[in-house]
Length: 118
Image (cartoon, rainbow, N blue to C red; front, side, top):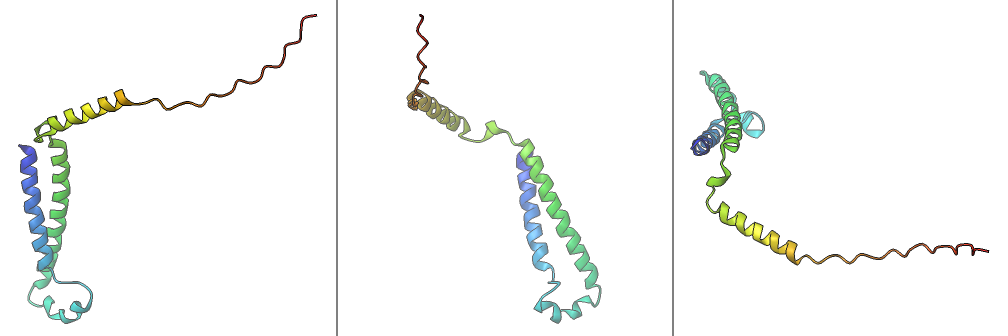
């Protein structure tokens, strides 16, 4: 339940970030030369608000992503039990059919002839 709520909030925050970035005026580049009139009539305050809002939403997305990861239950994913059973069966089949890698025999060091008993 918490996982679903986090995902919905992440989606809402993502849409809000997209809208906030699209509304912001560019701060540099060729378009900035024509935007000198943007600082008249309190537009400067709007720019500060949009920048703070963008950063706040970005941090919210990060925190909600971490919370969703912690809250995620592996057993609730549909089909995960079937997939894990298939994976386990494949692993067992590989272990059963595993052929031993032929090992090269290391020739025994030639034993020096023991001195013959006199």
